[in-house]
Amino acid sequence: MVLAAGIFVAGMLVGSDSMSRVVGVPTDIADVVVATSLIAVLVATLLAQYRVRWRTLPARPLEAAARSEAS
Image 1 (tube, one colour):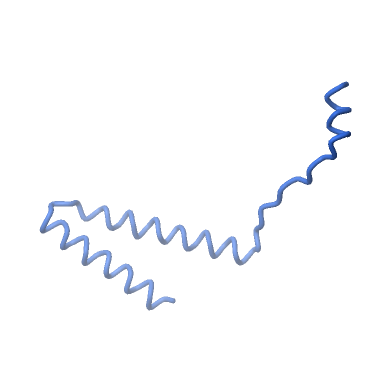
Image 2 (cartoon, rainbow, N blue to C red):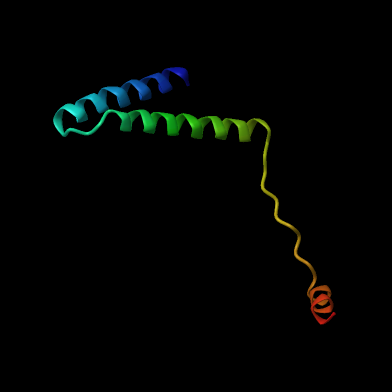
């Protein structure tokens, strides 16, 4: 995993240098992409580690909803 992340970051930085020379794109764009992907991986790891799950509230029966609207 660390090796893949290192290759990704290195590829982004080398690619940004090439883009800045050829097209004139600022190299800061690569830093933003690397930072965004790092934050996404950290959030995904955090949610998986603490098993955060989204729950929906159970649906109310129709007659209970009708009684509450009539009141």
